[in-house]
Image 1 (cartoon, rainbow, N blue to C red):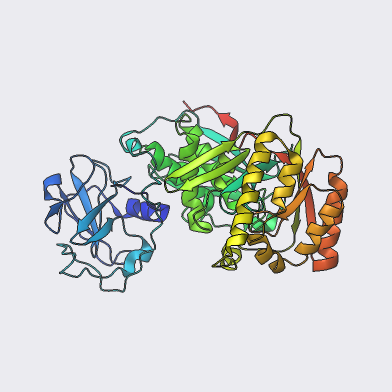
Image 2: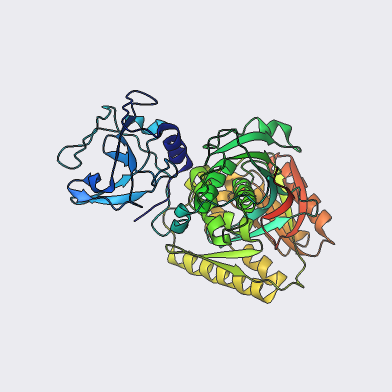
Length: 477
């Protein structure tokens, strides 16, 4: 049974694996031991054959009981498997620098013929559940590039939409495409095949922001998603460098990390001929989201697919696109204060238990919101968005002035108002843009008068397209 693995694990596997017949390296990057090439028949774990891909040969890498098994003839990408050792299930994966502290296997549970470290275990593994697998068939493919470079844009997103915590979201953008992130993916022959690098990070509207973002592809949302897309495509003969242009602020509640991930995954996929489905692209973006803010798809799904998206189930992973009548002129007043609300902090504040009455009310409002979207009922959308009785009451006090901002928006004529995602952005729903500027002014004033926070406002439209390619360049001859 195969599983996905983080880009940190994958990237480190590439740096450690070499085409060699017999090599042993101890102490390098945390005591990784590179062992010898073996055939499939030699792959045994506690006396049982390993369920590996292909017929070999395989180059084994070991840190304690953990073993990386590459696909035949090439060290990357790894063919991942899980094997049963007595009553336990142990992952087979490539060691990362953080995994250097892996413990030596107990002879009673995981005998290993390889030397191992003696440090304490530390195995931060980023992987999806069994239901969240990128296409296994892609391991045997190696598509040719269709372009030399591709630039893709992904819009901002409003997650939760009030009562739809972790399962409802929509994409929003302005006419200038400034409300979102842009990624340019370029073939880079100077890099090792199958790898991703980040060549530049810029933020035209917020120059200070670029310095806060890592150019390490293992620690950048765009890099993680791009590497996941490469793996899904099965690209092994080419490498990609990324240039990220941030249009969204960090920690704003507008899906900043999802926009970077969606644009990167879309750009990489288009670079090799647009072979992945939207579902595959969402899964690639989910690897990035899990690394940053937790395993939830209500930002990345609409960022990829556009419009309104319902996450019907996480296991098995099922998305439902909610068709919204084209005649609906739904607009969003987005007011972002000068205040960061990290997703992890805002999620930690949520109640661990809820009253059954609150659950029933929120469920009915979420259902009403879905119905209003399908009917094209702007007033119904606004009313349901304003009716969250579980998450918003917990988070609003953590954002100075938020309660007053919502009241000001409704008094000024907004159809509804709530917190966008984890915040601190407040989102008000209107039909058409006629009253947008006045509602935005009242909300900005409320943030200052009630919360002593400066704020900026943007009037956006429902973005029905999601992540899209905005430019390409031909292959170099």
